[in-house]
Figure 1: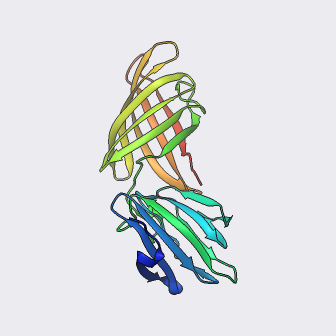
Figure 2: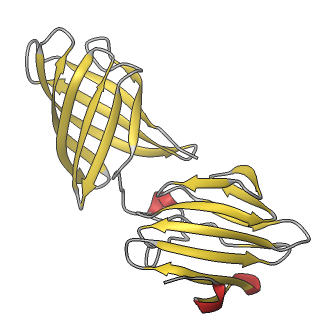
Length: 230
């Protein structure tokens, strides 16, 4: 079925802005929106939905976690889950754009600061910024996290580590997990870890206290920083 503004569901939102639902389903949302001159939306984020904004006419000003970006006609911007953002029209003409969301943002919008919400690591990537000398994680080791409820798991590789996995749970916004990996020498390593999570400059920081459960059973500390995409 062909869709356009003329045969799509229309709605008004903040400051007399308009939206037209071109596609409206649980897995995908495509909306054409119009923002009159000098209007803006409220800062917010989505826990699960990622979005792509494509500018049809005008110039959009985005505030992405305190960074200002201008996006012109024919340009777009990809926004990942849990990234605080706001779109503004700071010009004297109308701003028209498409916003594509997967899954839908219906019921998945938070106007409160992220730090006060339940921790969600699903789909997030982290890199090491520091580690004790007796560890094998380095600056080139990347962790890719998944989460379902309070259960977390991840894969990691890079540097001295050929491939590794970890699994555990979230306890009061702290992570408790066991890990295992194979290093480039072919050695298999195992350990356990407790991680304190904090937010710094718009990024999640994982402060890890770990212990080998093999070899010398020594202890150490590492700090991982979220890899952000704007």
